[in-house]
Length: 355
Image 1 (tube, rainbow, N blue to C red):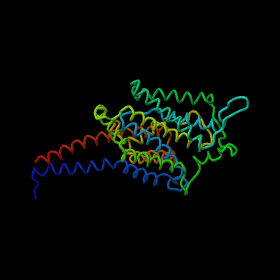
Image 2: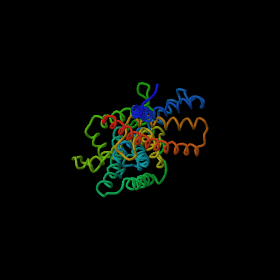
Image 3: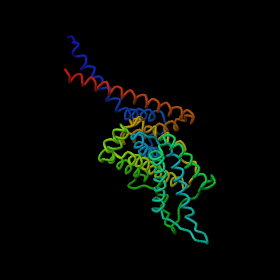
């Protein structure tokens, strides 16, 4: 039985579509591979205790990466999220420990809910500053967020002269005894931090897939000029994504401070790199206009399983950094290959329709 040359384009299109499907599912495949590998190689990897610890680590990175995903989809980048984590953690620690001293023996104390709201507003404010620098002063996102990275980290250091705020167990008298539950508590047997990830992920996915705002974010990242000409308020969209990213960073700052029952100004260093890695691994394009919240969460799981698995295998922290860097490079290379393959498959499909 022979194959005619007329059948070759159809065969090429079919093979290209199959390969494209594999590339789109690469994050799930990577998660399965690393999970199976460390299950076999790392002792006690599948233990219940390790699963709980790993899920808490994943929640931190995933919440941060969800905000980063919106920023990258819109065509930007946010390097300040790690510093916002440190700053908001210090704000939370200061309010739990001291409140606001008015002098003359008077002080304003805040309960846990009020502290959470204040910390969230601080994160949103820093995000709004990023949005202002980028939209109103025309500063490139990389430079603007690099600047706020240093400013936020410096403010965190200044808040305590570089010292730690310890013993943040809270006080029943001031209604802060529940502060520890944010990072250490559980509801229906599931850690509170995981519930925060679930809520954040569902809200972000709903915005991205079901609202005009989500469509505008994709439009701005895909073609900012075209989006502006079609009536999209580009500046408002950029303000939103950076404010949402700041909010996500504030949530992470709260969780870490509560978990440690202490606040340190260096908390969150290099967190922005893990967030970017999770987003890229999840299929978010660094050129903007493409990405999914679900993919980002799976990407965060890949990073989390990889990090914890390497620690359990006793791999040096230096080699862990090298491996993470290689994973990010590989993710970007595969993403570029996927875009080229998509373009080729689309051209082949157009050719087949034109016959």
